[in-house]
Image (cartoon, rainbow, N blue to C red; front, side):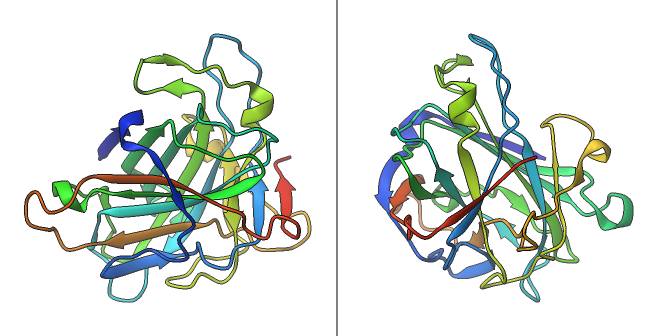
Length: 253
């Protein structure tokens, strides 16, 4: 299992990107998204650790992509706060599908990124591309099935301490949801929610309050490894005013 932490120096502001620009896209559910799910779950703990709920979604890669080494990962993050924020830590964890009844099992990838810029009342596409340094984030299992987990926290990976973000503001972040995915697939009736770090058996089925999809807005892709020095490490939190007047939000129970 590979764990990667992104220091603040690797994070910058960019504009909205409609798709993942890579040669091989295994899964993409970041396009045409106007809905999102509010994570919730953070409890007030001044000067101590705070984290939102973790949502975990089933992913089936496009046909033939089992065994692909993923070098580029994206997540569409919503900030429903009325202020710009750059003090939340994004966490993405990848699991294989060896759990009970094909549920999430062993952890096969882990990414933490701090300091990405999230404009007020907006959607931002967070993109990480490690192809330039010949590093893969994880390898898709041979059968093409895996699970992706997502949550936010106040841990600062650059200073090994905690940021000044409040629980209320953490609870106003969300993750895009859409169905169907543009590339690959996910069951719109299956997603899990629970406390990060707890046994996955304690996670519960996430049911949509209005019957809509619970397919979260992730994208996973692979780029050919470039020649040394031809590209720099890219980790982008991009801002986009994504139909803000018409988008809906759903809250964690």
